[in-house]
Image (cartoon, rainbow over all chains, first blue to last red; front, top):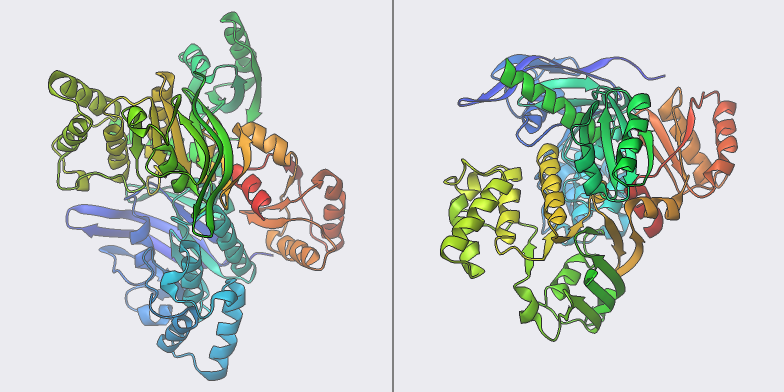
Length: 316
Length: 310
Protein backbone atom coordinates (compact mmCIF):
# COMPACT_ATOMS: atom_id res chain seq x y z
CA UNK A 1 0.00 0.00 0.00
CA UNK A 2 1.03 3.61 -0.53
CA UNK A 3 2.84 5.16 2.37
CA UNK A 4 1.46 8.38 3.75
CA UNK A 5 4.66 9.94 5.00
CA UNK A 6 5.10 13.65 4.35
CA UNK A 7 8.35 14.16 2.46
CA UNK A 8 8.03 17.84 1.56
CA UNK A 9 6.39 20.41 3.76
CA UNK A 10 6.02 24.16 3.29
CA UNK A 11 4.59 26.44 5.94
CA UNK A 12 3.62 30.07 5.30
CA UNK A 13 6.19 30.17 2.52
CA UNK A 14 6.67 33.63 0.95
CA UNK A 15 8.97 34.98 -1.71
CA UNK A 16 9.05 38.58 -2.83
CA UNK A 17 11.04 40.06 -5.68
CA UNK A 18 11.01 43.80 -4.95
CA UNK A 19 7.35 44.78 -4.68
CA UNK A 20 6.15 41.60 -6.37
CA UNK A 21 5.00 38.78 -4.15
CA UNK A 22 5.70 35.72 -6.27
CA UNK A 23 4.72 33.23 -3.57
CA UNK A 24 2.28 34.26 -0.88
CA UNK A 25 1.81 32.31 2.38
CA UNK A 26 1.96 28.91 0.75
CA UNK A 27 1.17 25.83 2.83
CA UNK A 28 1.86 22.53 1.12
CA UNK A 29 2.42 18.91 2.13
CA UNK A 30 3.64 16.38 -0.38
CA UNK A 31 3.51 12.70 0.50
CA UNK A 32 6.21 10.19 -0.21
CA UNK A 33 5.70 8.45 -3.55
CA UNK A 34 3.22 10.94 -4.99
CA UNK A 35 3.23 12.45 -8.47
CA UNK A 36 2.25 15.96 -7.45
CA UNK A 37 1.30 18.40 -10.22
CA UNK A 38 1.63 22.15 -9.85
CA UNK A 39 -0.61 23.94 -12.31
CA UNK A 40 -1.58 27.54 -12.88
CA UNK A 41 -1.30 30.39 -15.35
CA UNK A 42 2.04 31.95 -16.29
CA UNK A 43 3.43 33.99 -13.42
CA UNK A 44 1.40 32.13 -10.77
CA UNK A 45 4.58 31.27 -8.84
CA UNK A 46 5.13 27.62 -9.82
CA UNK A 47 8.79 28.00 -10.79
CA UNK A 48 9.55 30.03 -7.67
CA UNK A 49 8.06 27.30 -5.45
CA UNK A 50 10.12 24.61 -7.19
CA UNK A 51 13.29 26.68 -6.88
CA UNK A 52 12.75 27.19 -3.16
CA UNK A 53 12.14 23.46 -2.67
CA UNK A 54 15.28 22.77 -4.71
CA UNK A 55 17.15 24.97 -2.17
CA UNK A 56 18.32 27.27 -4.98
CA UNK A 57 16.29 30.20 -3.73
CA UNK A 58 15.80 31.24 -0.12
CA UNK A 59 12.28 32.18 0.99
CA UNK A 60 11.60 35.76 2.13
CA UNK A 61 9.70 34.30 5.08
CA UNK A 62 8.15 31.03 6.18
CA UNK A 63 9.99 27.76 5.79
CA UNK A 64 10.15 24.50 3.89
CA UNK A 65 11.47 21.11 4.87
CA UNK A 66 12.49 18.41 2.42
CA UNK A 67 13.06 14.86 3.72
CA UNK A 68 12.93 16.47 7.18
CA UNK A 69 15.76 18.95 6.56
CA UNK A 70 15.32 22.72 6.54
CA UNK A 71 15.63 24.08 2.99
CA UNK A 72 17.87 26.97 4.07
CA UNK A 73 19.92 25.79 7.06
CA UNK A 74 20.37 22.19 5.93
CA UNK A 75 20.35 22.66 2.16
CA UNK A 76 23.45 20.48 1.71
CA UNK A 77 21.75 17.47 3.32
CA UNK A 78 18.80 17.85 0.98
CA UNK A 79 20.78 18.04 -2.25
CA UNK A 80 21.88 14.41 -2.18
CA UNK A 81 18.23 13.28 -2.18
CA UNK A 82 17.00 15.71 -4.76
CA UNK A 83 16.99 15.96 -8.56
CA UNK A 84 15.92 19.28 -10.06
CA UNK A 85 15.27 19.81 -13.76
CA UNK A 86 14.75 23.48 -14.58
CA UNK A 87 12.92 24.76 -17.66
CA UNK A 88 16.21 25.61 -19.33
CA UNK A 89 18.11 22.61 -18.00
CA UNK A 90 21.63 23.04 -19.38
CA UNK A 91 22.95 20.12 -21.32
CA UNK A 92 26.27 20.57 -23.05
CA UNK A 93 25.35 20.81 -26.71
CA UNK A 94 28.86 19.99 -27.93
CA UNK A 95 29.08 16.87 -25.79
CA UNK A 96 27.54 13.55 -26.76
CA UNK A 97 24.73 11.89 -24.82
CA UNK A 98 27.26 9.65 -23.03
CA UNK A 99 29.64 12.52 -22.31
CA UNK A 100 26.81 14.53 -20.78
CA UNK A 101 25.89 11.64 -18.49
CA UNK A 102 29.55 11.19 -17.50
CA UNK A 103 29.84 14.90 -16.81
CA UNK A 104 26.90 14.83 -14.38
CA UNK A 105 28.30 11.67 -12.77
CA UNK A 106 31.54 13.64 -12.18
CA UNK A 107 29.65 16.45 -10.47
CA UNK A 108 27.96 14.03 -8.10
CA UNK A 109 31.19 12.09 -7.50
CA UNK A 110 29.85 8.82 -8.89
CA UNK A 111 32.79 6.65 -9.89
CA UNK A 112 33.95 3.50 -11.63
CA UNK A 113 31.74 0.47 -11.59
CA UNK A 114 28.71 2.15 -10.05
CA UNK A 115 28.92 4.88 -12.67
CA UNK A 116 29.08 2.40 -15.52
CA UNK A 117 26.08 0.47 -14.21
CA UNK A 118 24.00 3.58 -13.68
CA UNK A 119 24.71 5.12 -17.05
CA UNK A 120 23.93 1.79 -18.62
CA UNK A 121 20.60 1.61 -16.83
CA UNK A 122 19.70 5.25 -17.53
CA UNK A 123 20.36 4.81 -21.26
CA UNK A 124 17.81 1.99 -21.40
CA UNK A 125 15.44 3.64 -19.03
CA UNK A 126 15.33 6.89 -20.97
CA UNK A 127 15.18 5.05 -24.34
CA UNK A 128 18.39 6.90 -25.29
CA UNK A 129 20.72 3.98 -25.98
CA UNK A 130 20.60 4.28 -29.79
CA UNK A 131 21.79 7.90 -29.47
CA UNK A 132 24.74 7.45 -27.10
CA UNK A 133 27.31 9.07 -29.36
CA UNK A 134 25.06 11.77 -30.78
CA UNK A 135 25.81 15.33 -29.73
CA UNK A 136 23.13 16.75 -27.43
CA UNK A 137 22.59 19.77 -29.69
CA UNK A 138 21.56 17.45 -32.52
CA UNK A 139 18.83 15.67 -30.57
CA UNK A 140 15.16 16.53 -31.08
CA UNK A 141 13.45 18.59 -28.35
CA UNK A 142 11.79 15.53 -26.85
CA UNK A 143 15.07 13.57 -26.67
CA UNK A 144 16.88 16.51 -25.13
CA UNK A 145 14.29 16.49 -22.36
CA UNK A 146 14.76 12.76 -21.85
CA UNK A 147 18.53 13.20 -21.68
CA UNK A 148 18.10 16.06 -19.19
CA UNK A 149 15.93 13.78 -17.08
CA UNK A 150 18.53 11.00 -17.24
CA UNK A 151 21.22 13.47 -16.08
CA UNK A 152 18.93 14.58 -13.24
CA UNK A 153 18.61 10.93 -12.17
CA UNK A 154 22.34 10.11 -12.13
CA UNK A 155 22.59 10.26 -8.32
CA UNK A 156 19.33 8.29 -7.88
CA UNK A 157 17.42 11.01 -6.04
CA UNK A 158 14.38 10.12 -3.90
CA UNK A 159 12.67 13.32 -4.94
CA UNK A 160 12.37 14.79 -8.43
CA UNK A 161 11.42 18.41 -9.05
CA UNK A 162 10.56 19.01 -12.72
CA UNK A 163 9.74 22.45 -14.09
CA UNK A 164 7.48 22.18 -17.18
CA UNK A 165 9.44 19.23 -18.59
CA UNK A 166 7.11 18.73 -21.56
CA UNK A 167 6.81 22.28 -22.88
CA UNK A 168 7.36 22.23 -26.63
CA UNK A 169 7.57 18.42 -26.74
CA UNK A 170 5.44 16.61 -29.35
CA UNK A 171 2.70 14.11 -28.39
CA UNK A 172 4.65 10.92 -28.99
CA UNK A 173 7.68 12.05 -26.95
CA UNK A 174 5.38 13.48 -24.31
CA UNK A 175 3.66 10.13 -23.88
CA UNK A 176 7.07 8.45 -23.58
CA UNK A 177 8.21 11.02 -21.03
CA UNK A 178 5.17 10.27 -18.86
CA UNK A 179 5.81 6.55 -19.24
CA UNK A 180 9.27 7.12 -17.78
CA UNK A 181 7.80 9.18 -14.93
CA UNK A 182 5.32 6.36 -14.25
CA UNK A 183 8.17 3.86 -13.94
CA UNK A 184 9.92 6.17 -11.47
CA UNK A 185 6.69 6.55 -9.54
CA UNK A 186 6.21 2.79 -9.34
CA UNK A 187 9.80 2.48 -8.08
CA UNK A 188 8.86 4.84 -5.24
CA UNK A 189 10.28 8.20 -6.36
CA UNK A 190 8.38 11.28 -5.24
CA UNK A 191 7.77 13.57 -8.22
CA UNK A 192 6.75 17.22 -8.13
CA UNK A 193 6.08 18.53 -11.60
CA UNK A 194 4.83 21.86 -12.90
CA UNK A 195 2.47 21.52 -15.82
CA UNK A 196 1.65 23.86 -18.68
CA UNK A 197 -1.11 21.76 -20.28
CA UNK A 198 -4.06 20.69 -18.21
CA UNK A 199 -4.46 17.25 -19.75
CA UNK A 200 -1.26 16.25 -17.94
CA UNK A 201 -2.88 17.09 -14.61
CA UNK A 202 -4.95 13.92 -15.11
CA UNK A 203 -1.79 11.88 -14.76
CA UNK A 204 -0.91 13.16 -11.27
CA UNK A 205 -1.92 11.59 -7.97
CA UNK A 206 -2.69 15.05 -6.61
CA UNK A 207 -2.75 18.48 -8.13
CA UNK A 208 -2.22 21.93 -6.64
CA UNK A 209 -3.68 24.92 -8.46
CA UNK A 210 -1.61 28.08 -8.02
CA UNK A 211 -2.91 31.51 -8.76
CA UNK A 212 -1.13 34.77 -7.96
CA UNK A 213 1.34 33.14 -5.61
CA UNK A 214 -1.25 31.22 -3.64
CA UNK A 215 -2.45 27.65 -3.62
CA UNK A 216 -6.18 27.80 -4.38
CA UNK A 217 -6.96 24.10 -4.37
CA UNK A 218 -5.02 20.94 -3.67
CA UNK A 219 -6.69 17.59 -4.33
CA UNK A 220 -6.96 14.53 -6.59
CA UNK A 221 -7.88 15.19 -10.26
CA UNK A 222 -11.23 13.47 -9.78
CA UNK A 223 -12.26 15.58 -6.84
CA UNK A 224 -11.08 18.79 -8.51
CA UNK A 225 -13.29 18.04 -11.51
CA UNK A 226 -16.25 17.80 -9.17
CA UNK A 227 -15.63 21.30 -7.77
CA UNK A 228 -17.05 22.91 -10.89
CA UNK A 229 -20.37 24.71 -10.39
CA UNK A 230 -23.33 22.84 -11.79
CA UNK A 231 -23.41 19.85 -14.12
CA UNK A 232 -22.04 19.50 -17.60
CA UNK A 233 -24.10 18.60 -20.64
CA UNK A 234 -22.46 17.83 -23.99
CA UNK A 235 -24.47 18.44 -27.14
CA UNK A 236 -23.98 18.08 -30.90
CA UNK A 237 -26.24 20.67 -32.55
CA UNK A 238 -26.57 21.10 -36.31
CA UNK A 239 -25.04 24.54 -36.04
CA UNK A 240 -23.03 25.00 -32.84
CA UNK A 241 -22.49 28.76 -33.24
CA UNK A 242 -26.18 29.44 -33.73
CA UNK A 243 -27.17 27.02 -30.98
CA UNK A 244 -24.84 28.79 -28.55
CA UNK A 245 -26.45 32.13 -29.39
CA UNK A 246 -29.95 30.65 -29.00
CA UNK A 247 -29.19 29.09 -25.63
CA UNK A 248 -27.28 31.97 -24.08
CA UNK A 249 -29.15 33.51 -21.16
CA UNK A 250 -31.74 30.71 -20.97
CA UNK A 251 -32.76 29.81 -17.40
CA UNK A 252 -30.37 27.49 -15.56
CA UNK A 253 -27.53 27.84 -18.05
CA UNK A 254 -24.32 28.88 -16.31
CA UNK A 255 -21.85 28.80 -19.16
CA UNK A 256 -21.57 27.61 -22.77
CA UNK A 257 -18.26 26.57 -24.32
CA UNK A 258 -17.70 25.59 -27.94
CA UNK A 259 -15.58 22.57 -28.84
CA UNK A 260 -15.61 22.38 -32.61
CA UNK A 261 -18.87 20.67 -33.56
CA UNK A 262 -19.89 20.22 -29.92
CA UNK A 263 -21.14 22.47 -27.14
CA UNK A 264 -20.34 22.07 -23.48
CA UNK A 265 -23.13 23.56 -21.41
CA UNK A 266 -22.84 24.00 -17.66
CA UNK A 267 -26.31 23.94 -16.11
CA UNK A 268 -27.71 24.08 -12.57
CA UNK A 269 -29.64 20.80 -12.91
CA UNK A 270 -29.06 18.48 -15.87
CA UNK A 271 -32.27 16.40 -15.54
CA UNK A 272 -34.38 19.51 -15.88
CA UNK A 273 -32.32 21.57 -18.34
CA UNK A 274 -31.50 18.75 -20.79
CA UNK A 275 -35.08 18.45 -22.14
CA UNK A 276 -35.51 22.25 -22.02
CA UNK A 277 -32.45 22.69 -24.24
CA UNK A 278 -33.75 20.18 -26.82
CA UNK A 279 -37.16 21.87 -26.83
CA UNK A 280 -35.69 25.33 -27.16
CA UNK A 281 -33.50 24.36 -30.12
CA UNK A 282 -36.35 22.39 -31.77
CA UNK A 283 -38.55 25.48 -31.55
CA UNK A 284 -35.94 27.36 -33.56
CA UNK A 285 -35.94 24.48 -36.06
CA UNK A 286 -32.62 22.99 -35.02
CA UNK A 287 -31.95 19.31 -34.47
CA UNK A 288 -29.28 18.04 -32.16
CA UNK A 289 -27.70 14.83 -30.95
CA UNK A 290 -27.69 14.61 -27.17
CA UNK A 291 -27.41 16.19 -24.73
CA UNK A 292 -25.70 13.72 -22.47
CA UNK A 293 -24.05 14.14 -19.11
CA UNK A 294 -20.29 14.62 -19.41
CA UNK A 295 -17.42 14.88 -17.01
CA UNK A 296 -15.81 18.34 -16.93
CA UNK A 297 -12.27 18.38 -18.23
CA UNK A 298 -9.47 19.46 -15.94
CA UNK A 299 -9.07 22.66 -17.93
CA UNK A 300 -12.72 23.57 -17.41
CA UNK A 301 -12.40 22.92 -13.68
CA UNK A 302 -9.37 25.18 -13.41
CA UNK A 303 -10.85 28.00 -15.43
CA UNK A 304 -13.96 27.87 -13.28
CA UNK A 305 -11.94 27.83 -10.02
CA UNK A 306 -9.68 30.68 -11.13
CA UNK A 307 -12.74 32.63 -12.25
CA UNK A 308 -14.30 32.27 -8.81
CA UNK A 309 -11.09 33.39 -7.13
CA UNK A 310 -10.79 36.44 -9.40
CA UNK A 311 -14.38 37.45 -8.51
CA UNK A 312 -13.63 37.07 -4.79
CA UNK A 313 -10.51 39.20 -5.12
CA UNK A 314 -12.41 41.96 -6.90
CA UNK A 315 -15.45 41.67 -4.61
CA UNK A 316 -13.44 41.55 -1.38
CA UNK B 1 -17.29 28.30 -53.38
CA UNK B 2 -17.67 25.81 -50.53
CA UNK B 3 -14.04 25.23 -49.69
CA UNK B 4 -11.37 27.77 -48.83
CA UNK B 5 -8.63 25.24 -49.52
CA UNK B 6 -8.60 22.19 -51.76
CA UNK B 7 -5.29 20.33 -51.63
CA UNK B 8 -4.90 17.39 -54.01
CA UNK B 9 -2.00 14.94 -53.74
CA UNK B 10 0.26 17.73 -52.54
CA UNK B 11 3.89 16.59 -52.33
CA UNK B 12 7.12 18.33 -51.39
CA UNK B 13 10.56 16.75 -51.59
CA UNK B 14 13.83 18.19 -50.39
CA UNK B 15 16.45 16.07 -52.12
CA UNK B 16 15.66 12.50 -51.11
CA UNK B 17 13.56 13.57 -48.16
CA UNK B 18 9.80 13.69 -48.68
CA UNK B 19 8.49 16.32 -46.24
CA UNK B 20 4.90 16.24 -47.55
CA UNK B 21 3.72 13.04 -49.21
CA UNK B 22 0.61 13.11 -51.44
CA UNK B 23 -1.73 14.82 -49.02
CA UNK B 24 -5.32 15.49 -49.99
CA UNK B 25 -7.74 17.53 -47.89
CA UNK B 26 -10.39 20.23 -48.03
CA UNK B 27 -10.94 23.12 -45.66
CA UNK B 28 -14.57 24.31 -45.66
CA UNK B 29 -15.17 28.04 -45.51
CA UNK B 30 -15.99 29.64 -42.18
CA UNK B 31 -14.56 26.79 -40.14
CA UNK B 32 -11.58 26.12 -37.91
CA UNK B 33 -9.42 23.45 -39.50
CA UNK B 34 -6.84 21.84 -37.22
CA UNK B 35 -3.67 20.43 -38.75
CA UNK B 36 -2.04 18.22 -36.14
CA UNK B 37 1.18 16.36 -35.90
CA UNK B 38 4.50 16.07 -34.07
CA UNK B 39 7.46 18.36 -34.76
CA UNK B 40 8.94 17.67 -38.17
CA UNK B 41 5.82 15.97 -39.57
CA UNK B 42 5.38 18.45 -42.43
CA UNK B 43 3.00 21.04 -40.95
CA UNK B 44 5.05 24.16 -41.63
CA UNK B 45 6.03 23.00 -45.14
CA UNK B 46 2.34 22.59 -45.97
CA UNK B 47 1.56 26.10 -44.72
CA UNK B 48 4.40 27.53 -46.81
CA UNK B 49 2.98 25.85 -49.92
CA UNK B 50 -0.54 27.08 -49.17
CA UNK B 51 0.74 30.62 -48.69
CA UNK B 52 2.41 30.43 -52.10
CA UNK B 53 5.87 30.84 -50.58
CA UNK B 54 7.08 27.46 -51.81
CA UNK B 55 6.25 25.42 -54.89
CA UNK B 56 5.12 21.83 -54.36
CA UNK B 57 7.09 19.09 -56.12
CA UNK B 58 3.77 17.62 -57.27
CA UNK B 59 0.06 18.06 -56.66
CA UNK B 60 -2.29 21.02 -56.71
CA UNK B 61 -3.30 23.51 -54.01
CA UNK B 62 -6.35 25.67 -54.68
CA UNK B 63 -6.60 28.49 -52.19
CA UNK B 64 -9.74 30.68 -52.26
CA UNK B 65 -10.55 29.28 -55.67
CA UNK B 66 -7.16 30.03 -57.24
CA UNK B 67 -4.25 27.75 -58.00
CA UNK B 68 -1.77 29.11 -55.48
CA UNK B 69 1.32 28.04 -57.45
CA UNK B 70 0.46 29.90 -60.64
CA UNK B 71 -0.96 33.13 -59.18
CA UNK B 72 0.12 33.58 -55.57
CA UNK B 73 -0.10 37.38 -55.80
CA UNK B 74 -3.82 37.30 -56.66
CA UNK B 75 -4.68 35.48 -53.49
CA UNK B 76 -2.14 36.74 -51.03
CA UNK B 77 -4.00 39.94 -50.08
CA UNK B 78 -6.77 37.66 -48.79
CA UNK B 79 -4.45 35.60 -46.58
CA UNK B 80 -3.21 36.20 -43.05
CA UNK B 81 -0.38 34.41 -41.27
CA UNK B 82 0.66 34.26 -37.62
CA UNK B 83 3.96 32.51 -37.00
CA UNK B 84 5.00 30.35 -34.07
CA UNK B 85 7.02 33.15 -32.54
CA UNK B 86 4.26 35.77 -32.66
CA UNK B 87 6.38 37.93 -34.95
CA UNK B 88 5.91 41.33 -33.37
CA UNK B 89 8.29 44.24 -33.04
CA UNK B 90 9.26 44.11 -29.39
CA UNK B 91 10.64 47.65 -29.33
CA UNK B 92 7.36 49.05 -30.64
CA UNK B 93 4.22 49.65 -28.62
CA UNK B 94 0.95 47.80 -29.20
CA UNK B 95 -0.49 50.55 -31.37
CA UNK B 96 2.78 51.02 -33.28
CA UNK B 97 2.84 47.32 -34.12
CA UNK B 98 -0.72 47.44 -35.43
CA UNK B 99 0.01 50.61 -37.43
CA UNK B 100 3.10 48.94 -38.91
CA UNK B 101 1.30 45.78 -39.99
CA UNK B 102 -1.70 47.77 -41.23
CA UNK B 103 0.51 49.92 -43.45
CA UNK B 104 2.40 46.86 -44.69
CA UNK B 105 -0.97 45.54 -45.90
CA UNK B 106 -1.67 48.84 -47.62
CA UNK B 107 -4.16 50.34 -45.17
CA UNK B 108 -4.15 54.14 -44.86
CA UNK B 109 -6.00 57.01 -43.18
CA UNK B 110 -9.49 56.40 -41.86
CA UNK B 111 -9.52 52.71 -42.88
CA UNK B 112 -6.30 52.12 -40.92
CA UNK B 113 -7.70 53.88 -37.85
CA UNK B 114 -10.90 51.85 -38.03
CA UNK B 115 -9.03 48.57 -38.29
CA UNK B 116 -6.75 49.44 -35.38
CA UNK B 117 -9.79 50.23 -33.24
CA UNK B 118 -11.44 46.99 -34.29
CA UNK B 119 -8.37 44.91 -33.39
CA UNK B 120 -7.81 46.66 -30.05
CA UNK B 121 -11.43 45.92 -29.08
CA UNK B 122 -11.41 42.37 -30.36
CA UNK B 123 -8.12 41.43 -28.70
CA UNK B 124 -9.08 43.18 -25.44
CA UNK B 125 -6.05 45.46 -25.72
CA UNK B 126 -7.86 48.74 -25.07
CA UNK B 127 -5.94 50.56 -22.32
CA UNK B 128 -2.69 48.88 -23.29
CA UNK B 129 -2.07 50.77 -26.53
CA UNK B 130 1.16 52.40 -25.37
CA UNK B 131 2.65 49.29 -23.75
CA UNK B 132 5.78 47.86 -25.40
CA UNK B 133 5.12 44.50 -27.05
CA UNK B 134 7.96 42.84 -25.13
CA UNK B 135 6.37 43.82 -21.81
CA UNK B 136 3.09 42.05 -22.60
CA UNK B 137 2.34 38.69 -20.96
CA UNK B 138 1.97 35.62 -23.24
CA UNK B 139 -1.79 35.84 -23.72
CA UNK B 140 -1.75 39.54 -24.64
CA UNK B 141 1.16 39.07 -27.05
CA UNK B 142 -0.70 36.22 -28.67
CA UNK B 143 -3.86 38.26 -29.20
CA UNK B 144 -1.82 41.19 -30.49
CA UNK B 145 -0.05 38.90 -32.97
CA UNK B 146 -3.42 37.55 -34.13
CA UNK B 147 -4.71 41.11 -34.44
CA UNK B 148 -1.70 42.10 -36.52
CA UNK B 149 -2.25 39.09 -38.79
CA UNK B 150 -5.87 40.05 -39.53
CA UNK B 151 -5.50 43.85 -39.84
CA UNK B 152 -6.38 43.59 -43.53
CA UNK B 153 -9.48 41.39 -42.81
CA UNK B 154 -8.27 38.38 -44.80
CA UNK B 155 -10.68 35.60 -45.75
CA UNK B 156 -8.27 32.88 -44.67
CA UNK B 157 -5.77 32.94 -41.79
CA UNK B 158 -2.97 30.48 -41.03
CA UNK B 159 -1.95 30.16 -37.38
CA UNK B 160 1.24 28.18 -36.80
CA UNK B 161 1.33 26.80 -33.23
CA UNK B 162 -0.48 29.85 -31.88
CA UNK B 163 -0.88 28.72 -28.27
CA UNK B 164 2.64 27.60 -27.33
CA UNK B 165 3.53 29.04 -23.94
CA UNK B 166 0.13 30.61 -23.25
CA UNK B 167 -1.73 29.86 -20.03
CA UNK B 168 -5.16 28.13 -19.96
CA UNK B 169 -7.27 31.17 -19.20
CA UNK B 170 -5.73 33.16 -22.06
CA UNK B 171 -6.01 30.15 -24.32
CA UNK B 172 -9.73 29.94 -23.66
CA UNK B 173 -10.08 33.64 -24.56
CA UNK B 174 -8.10 33.01 -27.72
CA UNK B 175 -10.37 30.20 -28.88
CA UNK B 176 -13.48 32.26 -28.15
CA UNK B 177 -11.95 34.91 -30.37
CA UNK B 178 -11.36 32.40 -33.17
CA UNK B 179 -15.00 31.23 -32.98
CA UNK B 180 -16.13 34.84 -33.28
CA UNK B 181 -13.99 35.34 -36.37
CA UNK B 182 -15.31 32.19 -38.05
CA UNK B 183 -18.92 33.12 -37.28
CA UNK B 184 -18.22 36.29 -39.28
CA UNK B 185 -17.07 34.14 -42.20
CA UNK B 186 -13.31 33.89 -41.76
CA UNK B 187 -11.64 30.53 -42.35
CA UNK B 188 -8.91 29.50 -39.91
CA UNK B 189 -6.18 26.94 -40.54
CA UNK B 190 -4.36 26.17 -37.30
CA UNK B 191 -1.46 23.85 -36.55
CA UNK B 192 -0.72 22.47 -33.12
CA UNK B 193 0.93 19.48 -31.54
CA UNK B 194 -1.20 19.75 -28.43
CA UNK B 195 -4.01 17.31 -28.90
CA UNK B 196 -6.29 18.73 -26.22
CA UNK B 197 -6.46 21.87 -28.35
CA UNK B 198 -7.66 19.89 -31.30
CA UNK B 199 -11.01 19.38 -29.57
CA UNK B 200 -11.78 23.02 -30.39
CA UNK B 201 -11.52 22.54 -34.16
CA UNK B 202 -14.46 21.85 -36.49
CA UNK B 203 -12.37 19.62 -38.75
CA UNK B 204 -9.07 17.89 -38.18
CA UNK B 205 -6.32 16.24 -40.15
CA UNK B 206 -3.56 14.26 -38.44
CA UNK B 207 -0.25 14.38 -40.26
CA UNK B 208 2.65 12.05 -39.52
CA UNK B 209 5.87 11.65 -41.53
CA UNK B 210 4.36 13.80 -44.27
CA UNK B 211 1.20 11.68 -44.67
CA UNK B 212 -2.34 12.34 -43.51
CA UNK B 213 -3.33 9.42 -41.31
CA UNK B 214 -6.80 10.56 -40.27
CA UNK B 215 -9.30 13.31 -40.96
CA UNK B 216 -12.78 14.30 -39.88
CA UNK B 217 -14.48 16.05 -36.98
CA UNK B 218 -13.01 15.33 -33.52
CA UNK B 219 -15.93 13.03 -32.65
CA UNK B 220 -15.81 11.22 -36.00
CA UNK B 221 -12.11 10.55 -35.59
CA UNK B 222 -12.57 9.18 -32.09
CA UNK B 223 -15.52 6.98 -33.01
CA UNK B 224 -14.14 5.69 -36.26
CA UNK B 225 -10.59 5.11 -35.15
CA UNK B 226 -10.85 3.66 -31.69
CA UNK B 227 -14.35 3.35 -30.35
CA UNK B 228 -14.40 1.78 -26.91
CA UNK B 229 -10.73 0.97 -26.79
CA UNK B 230 -9.79 2.67 -23.53
CA UNK B 231 -10.50 0.74 -20.34
CA UNK B 232 -10.24 2.79 -17.17
CA UNK B 233 -9.66 0.96 -13.90
CA UNK B 234 -9.61 2.42 -10.38
CA UNK B 235 -7.59 -0.23 -8.56
CA UNK B 236 -6.98 -0.37 -4.81
CA UNK B 237 -3.24 -0.19 -5.43
CA UNK B 238 -2.64 1.56 -8.78
CA UNK B 239 1.16 1.17 -8.73
CA UNK B 240 0.92 -2.59 -8.18
CA UNK B 241 -1.81 -2.92 -10.79
CA UNK B 242 0.48 -1.11 -13.23
CA UNK B 243 3.38 -3.45 -12.49
CA UNK B 244 1.18 -6.53 -12.95
CA UNK B 245 -0.38 -5.32 -16.20
CA UNK B 246 2.91 -4.14 -17.67
CA UNK B 247 4.68 -7.41 -16.97
CA UNK B 248 1.73 -9.33 -18.47
CA UNK B 249 2.02 -7.04 -21.49
CA UNK B 250 5.79 -7.61 -21.70
CA UNK B 251 5.57 -11.43 -21.68
CA UNK B 252 2.67 -11.55 -24.08
CA UNK B 253 -0.08 -12.74 -21.72
CA UNK B 254 -1.89 -9.45 -22.28
CA UNK B 255 -2.20 -8.20 -25.87
CA UNK B 256 -2.66 -4.46 -25.50
CA UNK B 257 -0.91 -1.38 -26.90
CA UNK B 258 -0.51 0.62 -23.77
CA UNK B 259 -0.85 0.59 -20.00
CA UNK B 260 -0.66 4.09 -18.53
CA UNK B 261 -1.17 5.62 -15.13
CA UNK B 262 -3.60 8.53 -14.86
CA UNK B 263 -3.52 9.76 -11.29
CA UNK B 264 -5.16 7.01 -9.26
CA UNK B 265 -6.62 5.32 -12.32
CA UNK B 266 -5.02 3.02 -14.88
CA UNK B 267 -5.80 3.24 -18.61
CA UNK B 268 -5.43 0.09 -20.66
CA UNK B 269 -5.52 0.87 -24.37
CA UNK B 270 -5.79 -1.59 -27.24
CA UNK B 271 -8.13 -3.25 -29.69
CA UNK B 272 -11.17 -5.27 -28.55
CA UNK B 273 -11.04 -4.00 -24.98
CA UNK B 274 -14.65 -5.03 -24.23
CA UNK B 275 -13.57 -8.62 -24.91
CA UNK B 276 -10.31 -8.38 -22.98
CA UNK B 277 -11.88 -6.68 -19.97
CA UNK B 278 -12.79 -9.87 -18.08
CA UNK B 279 -9.29 -11.32 -18.45
CA UNK B 280 -7.71 -8.11 -17.16
CA UNK B 281 -9.94 -7.99 -14.09
CA UNK B 282 -9.21 -11.65 -13.41
CA UNK B 283 -5.46 -11.09 -13.73
CA UNK B 284 -5.59 -8.38 -11.08
CA UNK B 285 -7.90 -10.28 -8.71
CA UNK B 286 -5.67 -13.36 -8.85
CA UNK B 287 -2.82 -11.17 -7.60
CA UNK B 288 -5.05 -9.80 -4.81
CA UNK B 289 -5.48 -6.36 -6.36
CA UNK B 290 -9.04 -5.10 -6.35
CA UNK B 291 -9.50 -3.66 -9.88
CA UNK B 292 -12.23 -1.30 -8.63
CA UNK B 293 -14.70 0.18 -11.11
CA UNK B 294 -13.94 -0.71 -14.74
CA UNK B 295 -15.23 1.66 -17.39
CA UNK B 296 -14.85 1.89 -21.15
CA UNK B 297 -14.19 5.59 -21.66
CA UNK B 298 -13.94 7.73 -24.78
CA UNK B 299 -10.32 8.10 -25.90
CA UNK B 300 -8.65 11.49 -25.96
CA UNK B 301 -7.50 12.70 -29.36
CA UNK B 302 -3.97 12.13 -28.15
CA UNK B 303 -4.82 8.47 -27.47
CA UNK B 304 -6.12 8.19 -31.03
CA UNK B 305 -3.08 9.86 -32.50
CA UNK B 306 -0.58 7.76 -30.59
CA UNK B 307 -2.40 4.52 -31.32
CA UNK B 308 -2.20 5.31 -35.03
CA UNK B 309 1.44 6.31 -35.29
CA UNK B 310 2.85 3.47 -33.20
